[in-house]
Amino acid sequence: MLFRSGCANANWKYCLYYQQNLGGAYWGTNQQTFKTIIATYPDDGLAGQGKPVRNDAASMANNTPNCHVTTWVYPNYVGDFNWLLPTYWGNLTSTLHNNEASISYNTCY
Image 1 (cartoon, rainbow, N blue to C red):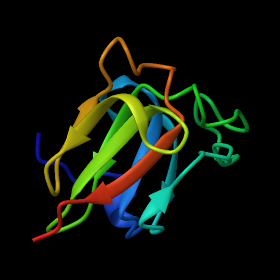
Image 2 (image 1 turned 180 degrees about the horizontal axis):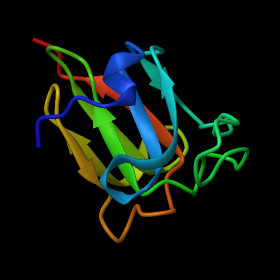
Image 3 (image 1 turned 30 degrees about the vertical axis):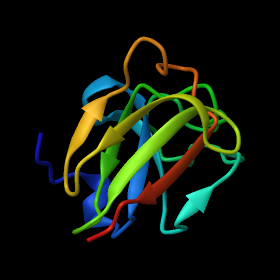
């Protein structure tokens, strides 16, 4: 689904959200790759604030204009994954819901 969310408004390349449908606290970055997610959701008064992002996300958003974003179940981009087209968002599948460890954007055109 195309989106306009806090992630896009903050100009992050991609974001992970604590709840499904881009709900709750979110963590965003402009780093092209994150071999192992080591971050916490910001203290912004939303559900999930202050919790570690790794293994605690339910949805993701891709704010790049021309790259796919991939979220992986293990560090170093290994195992099952979910990916998004540019400017799309989605809920993580049951395999990755609360079970994600690395993220990258790739296949840029």
